[in-house]
Image (cartoon, rainbow, N blue to C red; front, side):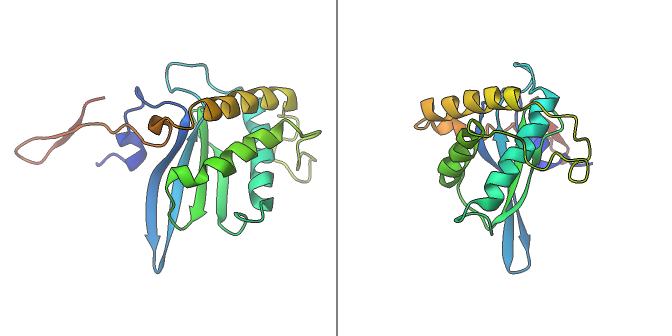
Length: 174
């Protein structure tokens, strides 16, 4: 069985940043999945689950209300490994084009007085939130993006080397 595309990225070399994970063509248009990575996989502690849930609500609300981008947003949600989020947008843009949007979204968390959509009627587990920790992670990531704005590594996935045998078997270096 062939590895899915996100598993062919060398996770030992991923740094925090904004990456194109995959582009899917759906008829006449495309949909792009972006990897918004806050933590270095397998090298840093993951994001606290309560903060992750709060960041999901806060950033999704921000993205779906941004006048320039709201009609492009399909999905914002956490990665199962708790090191970042997936953003799915209509169309296909370079990760650098999302920089201002993502930076603005994470900066906006600091101004939040509450986490939107946390009533029992609105949320699957409304007690699983931590606004103060969400602010801490958001500030950390925003500062990182600002400090590395000119670093191309925060926009380009490191790829795993695919070794192919003479009989067509695929092996990966990690």
